[in-house]
Length: 163
Image (cartoon, rainbow, N blue to C red):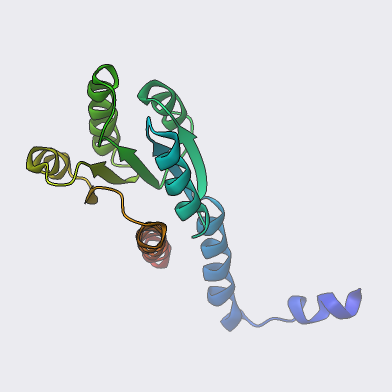
């Protein structure tokens, strides 16, 4: 065992910044929490699969109240809120949740809305959503989005630690 430890204890000071960056990057990757909110079970599954396949730990909710409760307890990096076709009772709750997430300054916010609904898109952009998706695309497209979000978060955290 001492032969395994010898190279580590003998590491020069020039290796320390590289080791620090690697440790910080591993910490960022291990804390990639993604909140997915949709009243549609099939869409929740699609979004969850796309996020999980790209390194996210997913927290999936079927209503705004559950999502609000979890969001207050977890350090989210990404939130995907589906407002495309909620019930009339849940529509206002999802809009309120989206606004709260946007105001919190925490996670990147992706709003999935109805294709061709310009009012939803304007509303989402006024909130400051990172992305508005008119209609949910195929799994591959969602996977690309989740990968880009992960890369953006990792770059942001690495830039913060480099300062």
